[in-house]
Length: 327
Ligand code: ADP
Ligand code: MG
Image (cartoon, rainbow, N blue to C red; front, side, top):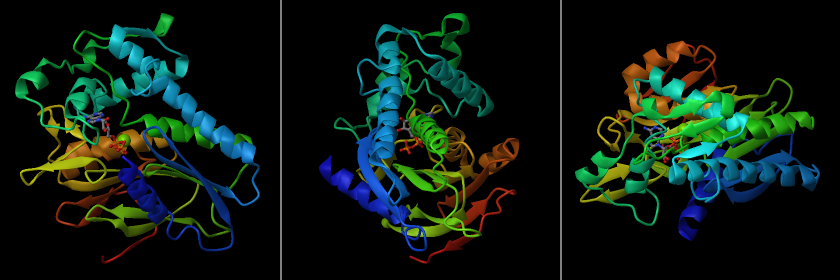
């Protein structure tokens, strides 16, 4: 665990590689939250209470949706098969179910039981038997949403997992808070979910590096962005090898096995972190061809994919400046 966190911390610093140089000096504070390394970079001299409030927001999100907190809404739902939520979490359910329908069921929060059986990156990671996998209920149409009472019910043998959108949800909360206290420059990194506020200086966007899936200590591309979220999903984050085969943490609801996508690293850029986070996972699962078609429904969001043959493709509307590194 410790080794993994050091590695993650190292990789996060690479994400900031070129954003630290230049006129504006940012200062980072880092904590573990939402199961990952979360780093908040704010202009030097920002009051400590602002950083503290940011980490409190992350802790509140954990309290709402983390599967490792026994009393989160999600844990209660997974245990009791029924829970009453708050409005925001209820809306997350509505959003996730809409996305499941839109993505031919590839993005599926009802995969919780399957996610637990594989436990990729956890202490019990293993290949589950097909018997175990087939016992899991994953039909998101069986999630019952009672809007009047903000209550959610699921059948036995189903569990909910917000792993593919939780950090995005948290990112939007941090952005709203930082803007409410009038911070106009910041870089937030929640385990690879990056959010930038403002720009580096007038006419100069921030530069954000994306981790190279073939060598996670390097970046393979630097992107110029301002006031946006940049979220990447890939197989290099959580995985294990068995008999030479790589098993990673983005699971295909059709096979209940790790997705055999032709995308190595799927990045979505746009305003809301929640949308970027959920779409990056969705695009990964859809694979290049369907993902590019799917992204046409999201004209305010752009995609940047590194494919398994190491070529790069972008969505038609992608118009950010970028530079590729030969590693
Ligand atoms: P990360 O959280 O590591 O940045 P993602 O955002 O791509 O990566 O989310 C992957 C996580 O989403 C998995 O660890 C698991 O919790 C969950 N998940 C796995 N398969 C699916 C799926 N088909 N649909 C929705 N969530 C999934
Ligand atoms: Mg995601």
